[in-house]
Amino acid sequence: MSSTVDLPMKSEFMLPTNGEVGANRQPEGEPNKPCTYLCGNSLGLQSKRSRELVEEEMDVWATRGVVGHFDHPHQRGWVGLVDHIEPYFAEIVGAKEKEVTCMSTLTANLHLMMDSFYKPTQDRYKILCEGKAFPSDQYAFASQAQAHGLDPAKAVLEIFPRPGEFCLREEDILDVIEKEGASIALVIFSGVQYYTGQSFPIQAITKKAKEQGCICGWDLAHAVGNVPLSLHDWDVDFAVWCTYKYLNSGPGGIAGLFLHEKWNDSMPPKYAGWWGHNPVTRFEMPPKFSPITGAGGFQQSNPSTLTLASLLGSLQVFKKAGMMVPLRKRSIILTNHLEKLLLQSKYFVPHKDIDSRKRPGFTIITPHDSKDRGAQLSLFFLPMGSGIMQKILEILQSYGVIGDERQPDVIRLAPVHLYNDEADCEAAARYLNLAFEEIS
Figure (cartoon, rainbow, N blue to C red):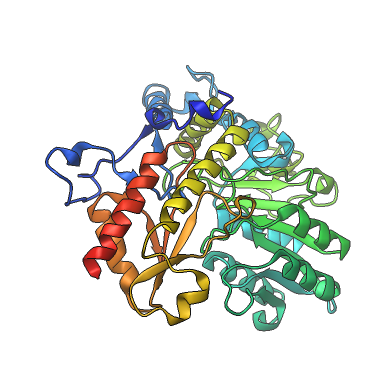
């Protein structure tokens, strides 16, 4: 597939029905219809191919046991199953195959990379990040600083939006790197901000960080499979991501890691593990660790076959869809369509009026320009702190519209390019208006 006319691919996915998600306001017969699932930014839907591959691996486990590591009826011997994943990862994140691997979980991989790259000195010790980064990242930054005997309040430098704004401005980020660069050891942002849905300019930030002698890494949890990436060409030092959002690997699915090839000689794995050992001699059990060249050398334990199979199934659907170029085009069309419908709502409030708003309403805190956002739109409900958001979320779900909340005032809706369509956007906008009418 090479054009947007072939998308979305709903037939490739298992869509929960209205009845299954607890929608209780559908007319008779509607409970068996697919719900309006706009929550792929939190947990992607299950692909039928993923289900098929997992069931195949269960059968292989049942019929071959340990022999399945090397003698596999589908030519996916478990000992080399990660090798099937890495080409897809490389294409999706814009890397060479040796620069990516599939392992562990996002925060564990973040700690591995930070422990390798964060080497504070008396003068250069700060970690620069966005204010209110995802909590797991915040905890990791603080604990890494503490591990080096530093006070996180001084070592972790957060950038916040300007007063009255929700998103960071590119020029403000670059300006801080320019001014504080000599004291910054590590610049690390999220590719797409989980709360606002803002897509950060990875290339520009990385370039500015390098000019100031900083290491630059990225948490791509909300960016991978969502927006186009070129990690190798952008000279990113390292990146980590989960796979259960836009990559649809399933709850708690295995994570990914990128390490630029320029570090292969000078940055060997600090914490060696058996699965990172050269596969040619791995089963000879040599006493000395001989790492795989590149990101693969950072692997530690053999990964779960079932989680790899689930991820591989979804990645095969990505390939069938033409990968990121057609998917990104489709994503822009869908997100623009949803935004247009929301802006037409009589309950929409422009940013300039939110402080004075007394009646129930909402604004959109995700950037308007497509280049500055991915598939997600974050709706901020007014009046602030009124508890309206939770009521709206419950009513939406009662109509079969599934988004997710970020307390206290935000609902995130993400029309995902692989399986959502214009009708989903229209249903979300229609039922949002009905929800406001009900609480008003």
